[in-house]
Amino acid sequence: MDDHFLSHRIQKIFSIVGTIYGGNGVSYFTLPNLQGIAIISMGQGNDLSFYNIGDQIGSQQVILIMNQMPAHAHSIPNSFDFTGVTGGLQPFSNIQPSLSMNYLICIAGIFPSRDSTISQLPFIGQIVPYTGSTIPNGWALAAGTLLPIQTNTALFSIIGTTYGGDGRSTFRLPDLRGRVAVGVAPGSNTQLGGTNGAEFVTLTDNNLPSHQHSLAGSKYNASETDAKGAGQPLDNRQPFLGITYLISLAGIFPSRDGGSVDPQTSYLGEIFTFAGNYAPQSCAFADGRLLSISQNQALFALIGTMYGGNGQTTFALPDLRDRVPIGSGGGFSVGQQLGSSTVTLTTDQIPAHTHSLNP
Image (cartoon, rainbow, N blue to C red; front, top):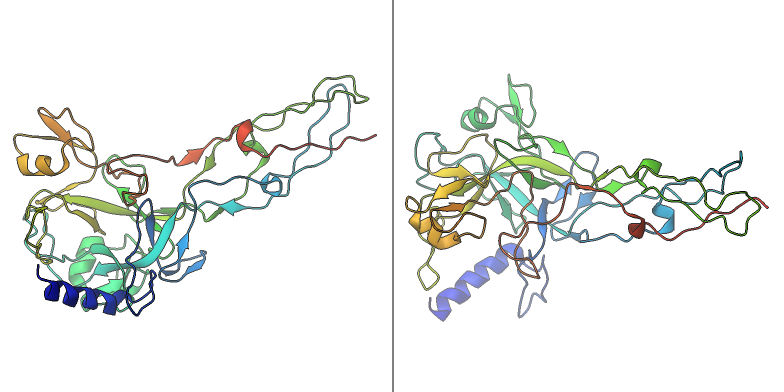
């Protein structure tokens, strides 16, 4: 690729992204950094906060402060008394590191038949993250817009009223504003089009780990308070929408050493996000299934056993069921699984605290 061609391509990219993701806009601009980062769509989803394109939010961990514990007291053995109340019921963020971009859905393109290979991109119902803010022709924001069935019959035949609409004259597009896309496939716990999760969590007494406090030196005939807390897990999921992830089993082999991939042709191993509930013939659900190496040698050459398999006769596809993909790099490797949908607090994870006693 010659320098003139590369320079021209970079200028075209800059015309789309500008300095949304950083840079001085004069001599350089910054591409989105998705290392260890999930993607949400810009805008304001129902009952969610508003996010501008390029907003970076969330954190890998939360260190609780005193006021984020539930207001609670302990009863005192052999007494009708209680300790004083500690805690303030303040919510804390439940969002993992995320970057706000635009999720688009293809509304005019190739129809993804169940029985034939996807020969050209984009295909109707395909969802892609997009760095810019100007929506290309044939695409729409995945923002829950109501569309008329009469003028969008192909897309309606794929998604129906999965995401809303009356099914007679209207249907609704997926709404990924402020939400990550969680994988749905046979065997997953997440429903296609299902929403759940929360931006903020407020702990209850039952979420606290069972704990006691010393009564040494007090007037009470007991060494410790009664225990408080039931150790119930809390939901650790940020707002999400259930979406289908597919992997391409056919297409151009993506060479490391030269050539370019036709943007209108799928390449082997490409992950598609799809608003429908099926896998076209040339794709498979990204559900961790084992494939035969002998029958899929090209794909095995690309991904090996990064996602599982014995490496002799079988290898596994990525398993995105009930998961959110993040970018590799920044300490995260391709195929690494991390996180959990619930968290059960330990005594080491709540702030060290005391309670007052009546004199």
